[in-house]
Image (cartoon, rainbow, N blue to C red; front, side):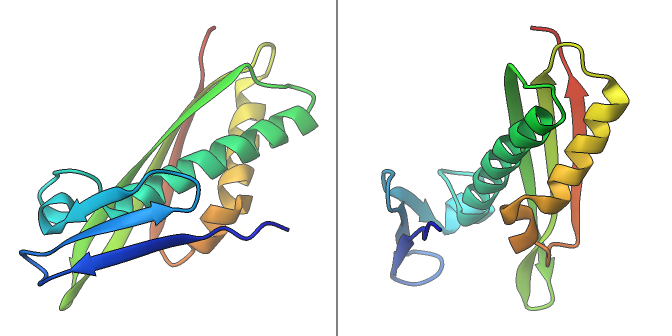
Length: 142
């Protein structure tokens, strides 16, 4: 199976320093204290959200195909909430929102497949320590 790698470097103090995160096959992503806690640039939680949204979308496509309902398109966002936790911080919740165009699929069947996918995708499993990963899934027209 595949092994994926990423690197990160941080230079300086927590408030005045800066860093870069680098997935093996993508551009460097700069981050700072401000990007993490004040909404500027990217941050590690954003990358976790992107990883979960991508993994979930791909796994949902497989689940839908296996159910005989191949999707035309799946769009997923992940809102990752970082909260104070004692002396540090923790990812308190991740809200997945997905919309899919799947002609002829019953909405209840879609919801069941989406919920099963949320529990089974590899990144969801890796994030099991997050207290709450919720899902809002809907079918849309092409």
